[in-house]
Length: 324
Image 1 (cartoon, rainbow, N blue to C red):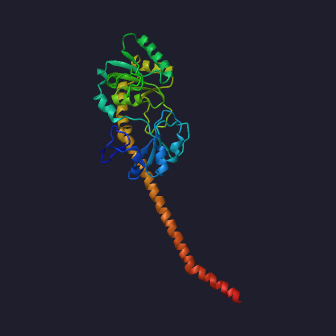
Image 2: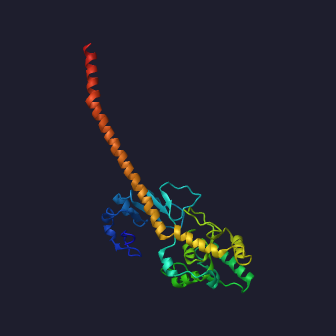
Image 3: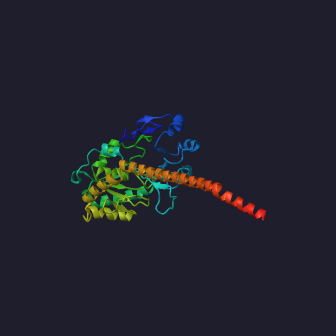
């Protein structure tokens, strides 16, 4: 039970109060106020006719393309929505954010001067080949500064949450590395909306991220909440600016970024956005129902007036002409 709301799911997971069998999904779904579904269950819900009012299709894929199955719904929430790509009005952006588990797993962020790691480059190079270019830039910077800075390189081996590769960096160790770092570099992975982007903000480290071309509500601003780079040259320039030229107040930027993200991009903020969209749609649905009711009554009234007054008048007029 979260804030008086009971959450059901077809799989046991964090935040789920009760599990309903997949076979009972259609029968049970009619009693829910708000339904969130993904591609796996879209056929069941579409077949049942539950595709309007309070049903949301959630597209959490890494690519920016729309899933045609989701377009049968009145609400389509897309994780990666490009600014340059026009989308139907029903499609809204809903990216990753700071999940509650990030905050509980990272515990309390350390003060910047207590963090032993200056720069952390922790990611799988297999997910996106461009990451290797950025890793080489950071290695060159490490040679440039010699032993004056501690720069850690870690391969997460991806899928750390289920460790299918059997080589994944343990989540607890990864979280502790984030907590112990002053600056964390985040590059695009399978998609632009990388979980590390939000994990870094939750840890209190300065986010040094590859620029995003995605739609974002309340976006993080460069040099206010984080730092961005567009290419390897800009990454090297940002690292020099932070550590060699001391031209960036990165401690303050890191604090600003964490506070801003917790206010606008937390799990609670994401949930509030979905509920707000649902309320607006339901209110619009009620207005449409009211308009239909008024229009129906107006038609009935016109028909009554026609039968009561107009038809007898026309009948009398026709008799008059016939008798002349």
